[in-house]
Length: 224
Image (tube, rainbow, N blue to C red):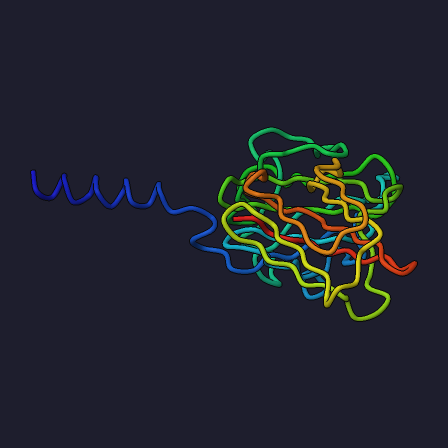
């Protein structure tokens, strides 16, 4: 009885080890990206939280020449993180969609499927290994992701489901916008010195976009 109990306990423990407990890095690979199918050239994603990774870059639509992508846990093939592995067929993803992820431990295991996009463009990808979900957003025709043109004239804090924003000194931002990862506008303020979302946000990744003195600034923020 003791031996059976020990074996059962070990089996139960193994079932409850998540991908987040195993993988500390994640990479984009495949001819649907600029990485190609060389694992040494796989593109490292940004880790923004425990088990949460993001990446923004160009993805290419399928033209019949293996334009698809998946994720590696290091610059080698095994294990990989990808879409459905129990049925044959790659998965076409849509803007703003959420898709289940699966760990493919070995190259010969299950079907070797990957993700495809409907059109070439700049996409933002978020992978949450805690939930084994990928979220994808097409940024080609949006302006929520940009680059700092100079050192940002503000500070941002994120804690307790709240984003707090404050301009340096007494200067005012022309406007401030907060978007969720799918590109939906959550909050907009004009003529701002400081503001807070006051616990209105769910856990996740948001984009703060600021206009000041004819410059645009944007920053991705993780709300825990």
